[in-house]
Length: 93
Image (cartoon, rainbow, N blue to C red; front, side, top):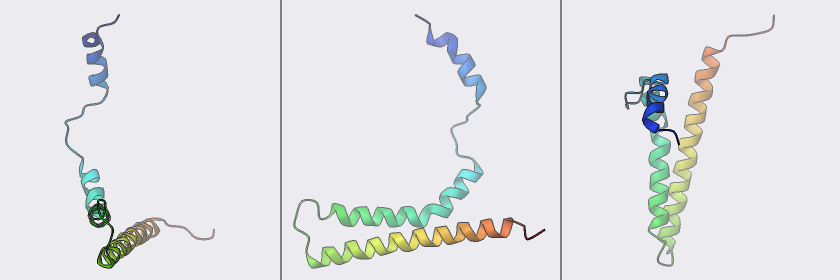
């Protein structure tokens, strides 16, 4: 049986990780935050109806939350596509 302590130096030496997200990761989270918040709102609306029969108001709340999720995902996809279009140069040669 091998000791883990003997292998720890090789494992930790390969990738220095300080435990904090990089600036690029934080920027990605900021870009995706509206989608994350919309997903949380949808989950909240669905969780409220788990232990009871949903009323018409509950159905409206869930539909509204689903539309917000779709709109947030659409906006994120459009921003991502616009950013990649602006960085790609090309044309017919």
